[in-house]
Image (tube, rainbow, N blue to C red; front, side, top):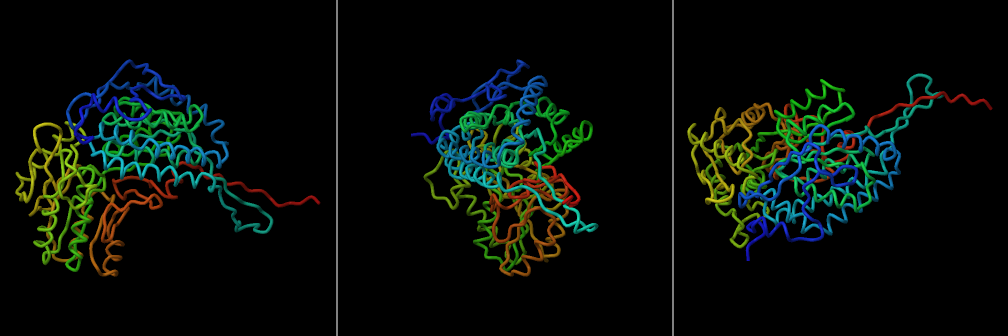
Length: 507
């Protein structure tokens, strides 16, 4: 029997639970055709076959979605925190009950192996909605002691929902990125117009039926499909959207910030790209370090913004470390194989998400070869059908090579030597990115000093890609503005109002 990511699109589209594939726009709790009359195809990256034609929202459609969100905000902003909490908990329960169907469609549209979508991604999605449900009734404000007239003035703050929020999510973790955005926004009382990625709209659309079933009022969540220059631009430029949250490329992040400046100075949070370093010190536990590097690079086929794509290895342990990571990469499973021996099953490889990404990654591999990096493993296409790429490991990589400077977003590992830790940190920081970094060492002082000096929003020590919903995530430099996850994400969706009054009793 074929594994889920080997099944043809025609079969997968007809199986599952009660959730049908959706292709329209979800506005005001209703499924509607796009006024633009434009559709685009979404492709199964395993088979390279069309799955469905999906409606693309034009400017008129975005206007209708914003109108619905603005109308709903009038009452949703005053809803009880306990109401929002219970709705988010109900949504989490529905996701859990429909996990198999959601994972099936996520695998179909994105290409990641079914067991990864079901066992990893959907688990985090459920946890995310439950985590932010816990915050919905706990955010209020502070009382403040003024410096002047301290004993006769009462001062306090309210944290109010910011309003209609535009959210634009990427294709690498469709359901999880949707949850990261919706969870804090809904908990704080905002209403949402969300654009799904044109590469992977289908699983995010399934969620709309669950949102409605959970009991969210019409207009609170509106979901549209489309490309960046059309649908995304209409959201970024819309004068009635008060805040925009975007995850994607640094190039697009610049465009969104510019659009916000040109229109109503809407608040912007950005989670952008990275070229994240991982430093392997000479005292590192090499088995532990190899596992960190393997997870950091190969999870989700390398399609992760914080991938450990620059690995600096102390020269004394370089050869031994290379042997370990190459051995682990050789045992990676791909093309639907779930039976062969492997080290970390959640790193099983699917195809790259589409032909564009496949060709982009292959071009980076060819650039690495041309510039003199040594291919220790892989370096070619995997098979002749589907957008599969062999797990690839480059050694003898130099800092000025293209593969050492640019975000590849594929299963391509770069290994580089260093002599001193100061040198490794300096080279790690020599980039306009600053999303994440890691260091493997058994000395706690070395680890903490490196964490202090590395210019990145997250630093992992003796691990990598260790995500927790309570821990914030976001970048330094051109890797973004603001933070996702944790309590910090709530700040993205609230305005702070200060209220002052004299305590002037008349009795």
